[in-house]
Length: 293
Image (cartoon, rainbow, N blue to C red; front, side):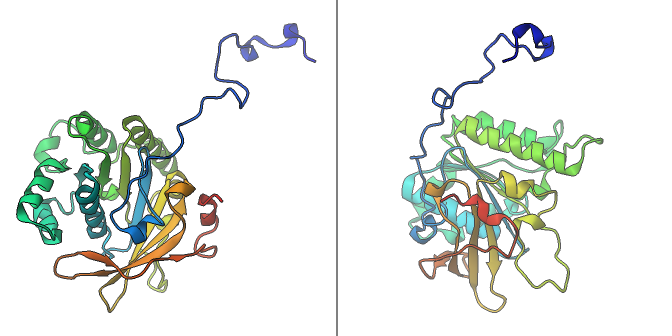
């Protein structure tokens, strides 16, 4: 036993700093509020929930944005969800993209675009006095979450944001800090955030699907994500593959793959099958640890 008089002052604390028995420790609410993607086949592997952070990656042209537009539309039509999107690569034709996807009546499309889908523009005139970085984007979206009943946020892609990295900070540390900020925003505002991050260019002799470890920056993408999806596209057929490579909350999904046919005219995704469970131990070391049994 150490006598109190022997404890140096810098190690002696008299206030409550959150040290308690596990029995008395405050706990988060049980995960019961799960949101369907609108695709029952996909829900087996990926459902959304308040506070969730999902990372989506895949090669250029694999259909990442179009797939997510499908999901946002389905969530709005089926369950009334409202989304905020920042999509600089698609902003100029975003109405056309959703009009092509829409399969219901025209008045319903207008209601969806006017009341359930909100855009943070990336036009330079709206950022004359502020950088278009993650802090500014989250501040602007946060100002509208309650006002517009927003519960899903799509940031697509991360690579188009301005960097706010201090000159002396390492890239890996910067990415880690940035993703912690995003996760804290999701928990604070009770929204699900989906962020698209492009992988670095793979060597020509590597004919494989990219993984989360190919995203520019660091392995923080793999570590910080609650859910992690990789999209692939068949080279000769209009077929896309959605691979769920990480699941933090087992109630919200499992590792596996769902294939979709893609209408090359409208961009509409239609599931082909019920999906296939798998654990790909070889693709990226440690990926399977995200799925807790």
